[in-house]
Image (cartoon, rainbow, N blue to C red; front, side, top):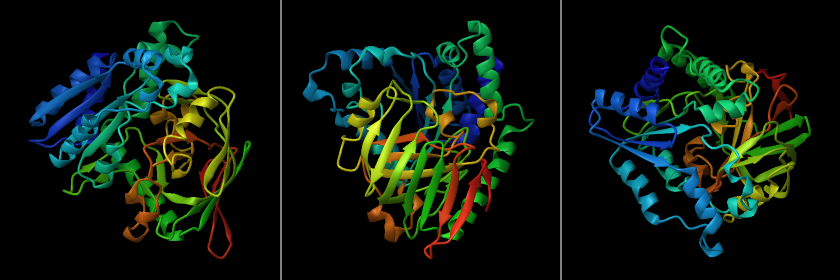
Amino acid sequence: MSDRIDSLARLIVEFGANVQRGQVVVVGAELGYEDLARAIVAVAYDRGAKFVDVTYYDPYVKHARLSRVADESLEYIPEWFGHRVLELGRERGASVSLTGPTAPNLFDDVDPGRLGRDIYPRVKEWMHVIDDRSVNWCIAPCPTAAWAELVHPDLEPARALELLWDEIARICRLDEPDPPAAWRERSVTLANVAARLTKRRFDALHFEGDGTDLQLGLLPTSQWIGGADVTAEGIEYMPNLPTEEVFTAPDPERAHGTVRSTMPLVVYGATIEGLRLRFDGGRAVEIDADKGAETIRALTTRDANASRLGEVALVDREGRIGTTGTVFYDTLLDENAASHIALGDAYQTSVEEEDRPRVNRSELHLDFMIGGPDVDVTGITRDGERVPVLRDGLWQI
C-alpha cells in the first residue's frame, strides 16, 4: 500500500498542485488521512517548498458543535479562517485538499436543519483566491477503511479497502506508465470539448430524462472550462484529480423546471438521497428528497443567492469514474461521473469581464449530480434551434 500512497502523493504534488520551489503549501486533511498527508508533505519539501502546513479536520469535533452550540451561533465561522486563505493567496502559495468519507453516518442523529446551517469546513474566501488565480491548488481522494466499507459493504474490510485503492489508482491513472502524460492527454480532450461548446454560444441548455425537465439559461459570454488551469503567474496545475468535466457559469436568473439527482449526495456529513428540485425564475422554489431534504432547504437559505445556480457541468461516459459502476459517496468522484449543477457561488473565470457582475455570488457552492445515459442534454441557440449535446452519455458536438 505504501507504494500506492507514494505514487498518489507524487501525482498530487508534482502534477496536480504543481508545487513550486519556495512556495508555502497548505494541506487540508481529515483525521484518517495521515499517511497520505505525510507523503504529500515529504514530496512537497523535495520539490523545494518553503513551508508545508497540514490542517486536520475532525468530523467528531463538528458533531459536538452541531449537537451543543447555541442556535444563534450555528452559522458563525471565525474570520481568521478566511484571513488565512487570503494570506495564502497574497503569498502566491499552493494548496492540496484531500477528500473521502472517514466517519460515514456520523451525523445521522443530528437535526438535518441544524446540519444545513453550518457549512464549515467550507470557507467562502476560497472562491476569492480561485477567481483571482493566486493559488495553484488540487483536490484529490484519499482511500480509507471507513470509506471502503461504505462503498463496498458486502466485502471483507481488507478486500474492500484493496478494491477501493484499485479503483482510485485506475481513476487517477496511476496504472499508466506515465500518469502525468496520461492526464495531459485527457486534459487536452476536455479543453477541446470546452472550446467547441464555447464556440457554439448557446443561449440555454435543456436537460431531459430520468425525472428531469430543466432549462438553464447561459450568459452571453459564458465560456466552458475543462482540464488544466493556470495561475496569474503562469503556473499550470490540475485543480481536480480526477477530473472529467467541462463547466461554465449559467445565468442565475434563468432556471426553470424540475430536476432529479441521479446519485446520492454527501454534504457536510449528511447523505442526501432522491433529491428533487423545482426551479422558477432562477430560484429553487421547491426542494424534496427521500432523505435529507431539510438539510438542503437550510443550505439554500444561507444567503440571498444560495437558492440560485452558480455552475453547470457536463460529463460524458468516456471517463474512468462512471465505468466503474461504483457510487463513491464523495462529491469529487461522483460529480466527475455524471453531469451536475451547483447551487450557490459561481466561478467568475467562466465568464468574460463584462458578465462577471451578473454571475451568482453566495457563501454556498453545492454540486449535485443530475446526468447519466438516460438524461439528454440539448443546446438552444439564440434563434431557438435545438442542438444535441449529449445523447446516451456521448458528445454530439
